[in-house]
Image 1 (cartoon, helix red, strand yellow):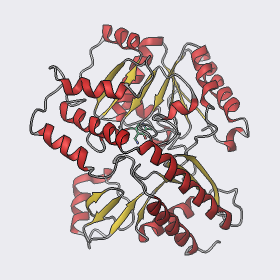
Image 2 (cartoon, protein in one colour):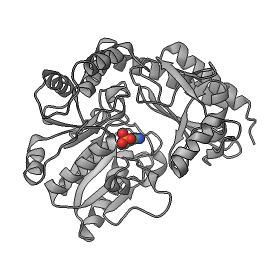
Image 3 (tube, helix red, strand yellow):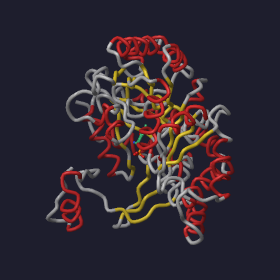
Length: 428
Ligand code: PMP
C-alpha cells in the first residue's frame, strides 16, 4: 500500500497532507484523470473498467446529471429554508419508488449522517438504546454509527448496547437462512433486554455488502424483521449499497424480502457522485422526534443536490437501468458460475443483479477462505485494466459492483480478465 513516494511527487504530497489517514488502493496507486460510463482513465492514458464503485451508478460523469447540476449551480444554490419546487419535484419522484407508509424524507450529505439520524429517531421512538447489526457490518463514520459498524473497528468490540449476529450465510445458518438469522436476531434482542438496553432497531444493509453479499433466498429477512417488531424495535433498511435499482429485482434491496421498514436510509448512488443522501421515515416517527429537537443540515438536499438526484432517477427510469442490472447481472453471474466450474478456487458466486459476491478459497482445500488469493486477484485484475475490491469476514469475497449501465461486452471483458488473472496465479 505504501507506494514509492520518492518516485512520485504526487504521492509524497498526498502523504504529507493526509498523514496517517492516507489510505490508497494498490501498491502503486493510480492517478485518475477522467471517467465516462463504466470506464475510468488514468493520467497515463490507461483505461480501467470500474467494477468497484457503486456511486456513479448511472455511469461516470453522466451527461444528463452533469447538465442538471451545472444548470442549477448557475441558477440557485441555497439551503432548504426557502421554498423551491425542484426540491418537492425530486422528493415526490423519489417517494414514487418508496412504500406509501414512508411519507417523509430527510436529506443529508452522507449515508453516515442518514444512519446517525435513523439511530436517533429509533431511540426516540422506542425509548430503548440497543441496536442489532451483522458481524461485519458497515453503516458509516459518525461516533454513534461507528459503534454499529464492526468492520470499521481495527481493535476491540462494539459497546454493550450493540449486539452482532452472523451474516445471513449458509455457512452460518445452513439451509434455513431465514430461520437461523431470525433466531440469532431474537437471541440478540433478548440479550439486549436482559442487559437493560432494550431494542431500538435492527439495522441491516439489505444486501449485506460488507459482510460478503448475501441476497438469497429472497424473503429471508422477513422473520428477523418480525422478531424485532415483536419486541417493539424498529427495522431500519440501510439501502446505501443496494438501493436505486442495483439488485435488478427491485428498486430497493428490502423489497426483495417483502418487508416493511420503519426507516430507509440511502446515499452513494443517489446523486451519482454529488453528495446526496437521506432517509425516508414513517411521518409519525419524525413528528415525535421533531418535538424534542430540530434537524437542520446546511448542505443536505440543496437545489443542486436535488437536481442531481432528479436526473439520476430520470436516467434510471428512462434508460431501463433496473432491467439492465437484472439482465446483464444475470448474464455475468452465469458466466462467473461457468468459470467456477473450471476453477475450484472460485467457491461461490451469489448476489442479485449487478451486486455479486465471488468467494475465493484455497486450491488444496476450497473450504478455507483465501484472502491472499483475493488480494493477488485484485492486483492481477488491475494489471488487466479492471478495478475491483474485496469484502466479507475473511476478505476473500470479490465485490462485483459496476455501474448499472454495464454492457454484456463489458461483462465479458471482466470475466476474461478474471480468468486470465487466476490462470496467472497457479494453485498452491
Ligand atoms: N451504509 C452502508 C451500507 C455503506 O456501505 C456506507 C458507505 N460505504 C455507509 C452506510 C456510509 O455512507 P457514507 O460513506 O456516505 O457516509
